Length: 166
Image (cartoon, rainbow, N blue to C red; front, side):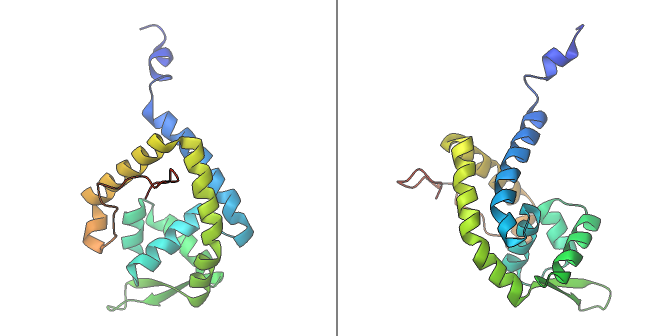
């Protein structure tokens, strides 16, 4: 083929997912900005709150981020008063936990997250939103989330009467 870009451009799943990721992340980042929070930080706070006192490696594997990236972000979040970083049982490992300030931030940011969720669902449409959530759930169910107790949505999840995914 003389022009491979013509075969790739209209069909590349990776390119489309990156485009969607940037658009959707922008929605959440704008909504969360008033709380001094980014989507990536919210994801870490939610994961830590869900797991209780996980080790950083647990969070990095769950969120599919580099340990060094998590370490930098966790340190910033500790400095902001949202996370506590404590020595683990063996003295070499660490654990993460939500501080009272982190828990308050999650509560305060919930309405902004809900607004962003509605905007993202409107952008994607009901069918695409459902497909994205199902694909994420398959990844979680097939991997690490089961071993650390992250809840996943039941496979029979339906939309609500308001068109929102339940």
